[in-house]
Length: 247
Image (cartoon, rainbow, N blue to C red):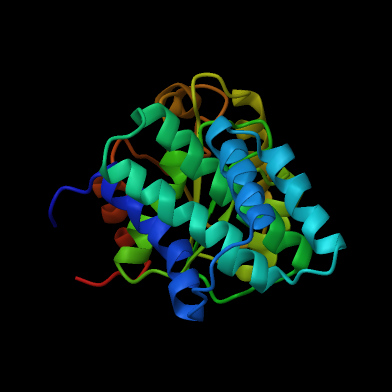
């Protein structure tokens, strides 16, 4: 398998959202107020303000706009412009990573409110981050890498530990992917891993991120099945525990 790059995976994730706009065939010009709303939304996304972006979207829902209309316009256009800016090196990698993560986190929160994605979806793997984890681009890209290999993946961003455990109980996945950054509360990750391993037929746990080795050797000793320093290691381990991937 060729070397997987973060850039390519992030652009893949954006393309999935951007394609919603083209699939609908919506090409009518925007009014001034709609253009201003789009600019405000994209400003919040680039600044990494998930709460404000989600509040803006919730306001649109309260006004009667549908989930699909919002995703097909506001989110899809933001994804398309982020993707174009990424390819043109218009922003730094850090700024673009923050924008991609914020856009996908806001979209995930919107799906949860609208109950568009339900537990027990037949996914083979679940990738998740906890509420206080700010750097989620890595786990977003990991989920995208697995999807590229034909794996059905659920992605929960900013999810409470109990919600992750419930999703695992209903979904019966073979693999749980977590991330540990240097600024994260590492004890919370260890607590979640322990709860998962106490459940019936627990999934294998794979841990990535800058602090993964520290967590696995500390509070998570014996709880994490694989510390993955790159995506190739993660994919190879997944195959060993029975996750079906395309060749």
